[in-house]
Image (cartoon, rainbow, N blue to C red; front, side, top):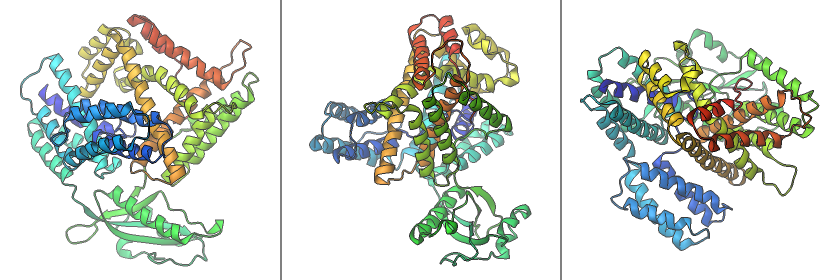
Length: 577
């Protein structure tokens, strides 16, 4: 079992950065440190009247208390944890613009940030190493507890690696290579390897990267300072032959922007250079539509070695949202068919048809944007179309908070069960395995599964078959959704009204896109079914349907009854990805 702990660490942290992982298990937008920074900024914005509702502040206050109570790697030498939590609790009761109390709390928050920010990554790696270094055999209960501790620390660690500057896609390939490497070796060498890669990641040593962007421009476009209209053979010869045609001057003139930059990884290097190009184009202002230059999705990048030479240039994308799979032809045809069904269905009111079409359009426009901020705005507009009301007195965001959260909460357990079933498909597993305690235990004992699958199955068993655990599982997810939706709304306001850009824009934009796609899939499924009754189908009837299912889950007793109600919830994921 001690070797299983090490395997679990590698599988779990790789899972955090895998874009095919469902959102519950991917790297989160915040850990304890980033939440302290966010709490500080939110209180300052509240005091400057940039945030209108204290409820927005309260969500961050409550989330901060939760994570600090669970944190095992935060130190409180300069400000005791009990004192900081007490100050946060006191401030929660204020609900007014009290600058004295705010300044008091901000002082304690700054002390905690100053004490922890620079050394938190090191402490997380150290804590995880202690959990992995156990040599004794563990009984099942202690083993499961140990996995839970590693899981919590890995969740913090993944976010911290993003915070210090590494890119998510780089970290995925980094840890995936370790999984493959360690699978070929005996685990007795693992801790030596762990010390090696943890020192490497903690050091945050910058590499020197050469980055090449290719921009297509009109024939009559004047060459800009810093750009070139030719590429050297030295660079061209170090690029795959099938990629070299991208550098040819054909019907569209090409400009090349070539820069050496220091960065933690090649993807960070590309983003730095892309930001340089953005600023050049911002200051130039391109003029007529036909002369607008668009920065491409990808660039070529190579790391300079000790001799200041680049061995090879690789094509890399600039951004990578957490989109598990591209739409296939089957998905495209299914979406087209279901929309034809909805548009021609006389029992669907015209307003609902209009809202669905508008949301689909903004999803498409968002997916086509190069700038992450424009993606975010279009995904948000798509959600607003679905949840807005013709009644002027109705707040779109309040409706979104109520109904989006109800829909996602009612589907949450079933979605996670189906994800496990998909994961277990190689074992010819039936969904019925989750109906009884014994069925899950029999599956675990009867199959050779990796430790991460073992952990997920044990956790799901606990959520499904222990008294009130299902309700707690859903309620906890509901609270997380409330907090994060409030965060996304605050980001939207800061982006629209202040032009503020966030360092974790990729992460929150991925979250927002997932919400939009998830709600659209359920919406399309609901309105495409022909019903025998004469009740007109509206957006409100769709919302009420899922509120009904959520109440079924929260009110009913008995494991079998709960399981049956979980599986009754309509859940669609095939129209959009």
